[in-house]
Image (cartoon, rainbow, N blue to C red):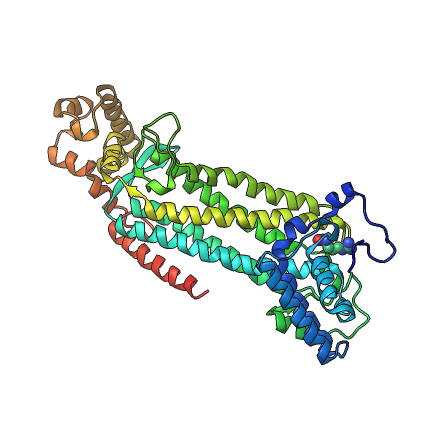
Length: 466
Ligand code: ARG
């Protein structure tokens, strides 16, 4: 059994502080599946090129499966002295099958091994995140479907702007997340390039069969340049930047949940099992999960800065700095997946308060633009003048704490005789009529929204087969 660890020239064990500084096993034990998959493929390739015989291959396969099972049952001992996941698995294999185990590292370096593991990780985690986004999009879609006829204010500058349908607001997020699925798909596609078979940097003194390896591991292509293969962390940059974008979308939605859940807005009520109370204030129902999503966004976005800074100015080829890629990669996956799950559950469980939304709409003068447009279209008034007249009417209503609906005939006439006709005035400020006028593609009228719902259903269908 090997107790003291040191490769080649360096026979001594490291000082304790140096072990702590050097180890990556505390993080990359998460890569055990990928590492074992890579080793199995490598062993099969070594058999194919006659470096291993059938019996040796069998022993290695059985040994690696045994290690996998030990790890999964929590029976595997991780030791920071063994630095990383590759060394742990290799040492354990040697313990299981002696000299045969010592043959596995033929024609391979930890440099192409870690590159392989992280490529496999990026591919599989991109798919897992895409599945979570799909669930979130489905929740948004369902809520949108049942709120085609719920009207609320649309905001600009967080000021009431124009009436919209709630489906419109929810689908805006649906499309943002759907683009994130595209990003994940692209990330996985670009990561589908095999680095294994590059050796430490220069290539290998063996006739390694990289096509066989690519095929065995499901890669679409092979790195053309062994130096690029062991140096590139583009796959990690892609993944971490995609998760940063996903979190920027999630945090905007989280912020709206927090805002709408406030007493002042009261546009929604969150499911009880997703909120917390206060230890002192009995009336509180806090949107902690949404706040955590908003907070964790800072962390995930910082991970992108982390890896970008690590790579800046790094010379070819492998440098130990690269070991630090593990933190942003694994952390961004973990945090983003937790947050996506939380968002999907939150959205599915929200009880939207249509009545409150309606009140906010009436009090917020969201129909002011429609009234100005009506003056232009029906009374042939230049838009600037119409804008001015409606502005004066709104000011009067604000002073008297009235909605446009509540303004008296006398008040309206005092501003302009154009507001006198009851029929014209009522029709021009009618909220339903306002949304119905937004017939443009992508707009808030019922027909445009129904069309969008249909398109969203097709989009979901497309991603389900991804
Ligand atoms: N623990 C290293 C890492 O994770 C493995 C590669 C080590 N290569 C080396 N030449 N020291 O990056």
